[in-house]
Image (tube, rainbow, N blue to C red; front, side):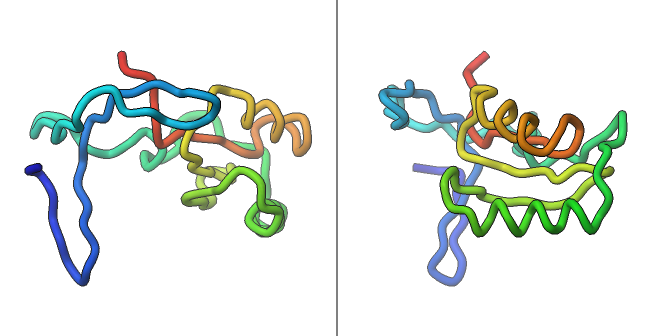
Length: 120
């Protein structure tokens, strides 16, 4: 496979991966393809939050971040505070995680982003 880098025993790269979800498990249906040079390679989850600011203050967002990381359950890949939101990256959210967190903490507090997205 091409399009990867290695350093200090770690291998990474940007790929388009196609597959399906089968009872919560990702099943690859095609070989991964390196991201084309015209694509940014930056998943939506890593892009800055623009537009309407969230309603969270830093102290509350930090507490929620700590609580979510300590709670277990859905693994959070990355989290951080941006523009009044706690932004969390999960492997996949079909909207259920966002709804659950909105119900628990209120709207415009947490922004859930998926690392995996449906192919368009």
